[in-house]
Image 1 (cartoon, rainbow, N blue to C red):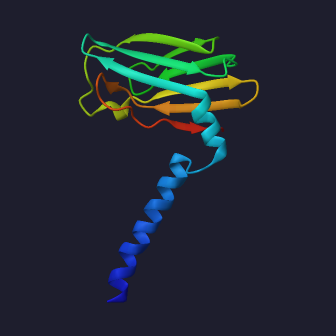
Image 2 (image 1 turned 60 degrees about the vertical axis):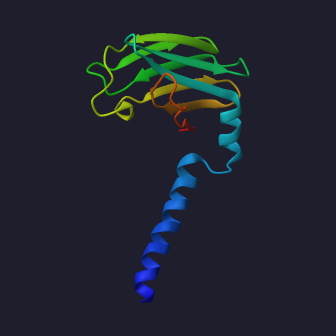
Length: 135
């Protein structure tokens, strides 16, 4: 009987720890990144994705944006603390937007090298999670 109960409890605890670890939990480092950087990637029915980036500190020196999972990966560099980029995307993907993550490589004089990763979402859908990291 105890073995039947311990497995689900262990799995539940492990899952919670994994979620806290992957989302950054209460890590002050991640909170600082969340408070500094904003990114959104919206798909419009007219056949394009609008990617918007904003650095509230206005200190970003460069950003390399990639949209992965396409036949040819989309990549573009920016040298400002904010941008809006329109990317042609004629059809919604058959297997969902998760296969096309948007990845930003950011250089910031105070925060160093920062990576952001998010998913494209259709206009009107809730914002997906943004993953913040420092490699």
